[in-house]
Length: 154
Length: 154
Image (cartoon, rainbow over all chains, first blue to last red; front, side):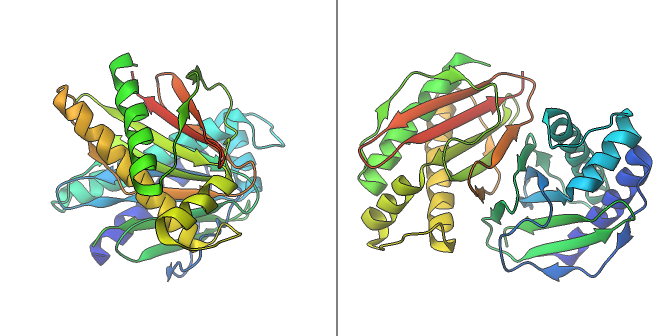
């Protein structure tokens, strides 16, 4: 995987979460992800396809963080992973991937985004089926942790 | 959603399962999917992007059916949803979507496929975030049931 792909996703995750949800994320150490266990209870997944790029991105959020986002973005006080939370996670996934797409386009890498799919459940497993390595980027905040997984073929 | 999109997926699901896994599927009644609960314990999801097409496809398999496929395709006797099962589900997802892509291309609808993502866990929830309806196509077999979900924007 081209390391130039990583930073636009980190920047976009931080920017979108700050701007849309007033959540200030600290970036922790990126790592290779060897297992398939999702780190959060709700995840948004989006496919990416382009001439030089084919892969998938997932954001995985701890439950409490997703509830804090519901409060900050929609003034809704939720206590369970309902349809509204899933919708919000889908929107945020779209925005983060869309922002990274913009940054990468400036560097000459073009891709189109599929529609997001939201998965929830305790310890659900998410396995990206790609040829290349799977990178996990952890983020912490006072409202809970978030994880960004990016994987590309080749 | 264009109803012309549905049949190529049904045909491809039946063909790939028969040819690759020697599983004979009966096609049950298609329905609109209103909830997000996955019907099987392991699901393969793939994004699709093209000029006239943007959406996602998921196949969801009952555990026992995925074990029967492991036996038929790889002569492996597995009793749990391990990495090999997830890999196999990823391959089958690719093949079914690839086959449907071929059929749809003949009708003038072109799209590219993202990389598949495999999700497992009991009663994991899968929510496709699209503008259009979500169609679920159930299939039965003597080894267990399979479900195909297809969703497109617009």
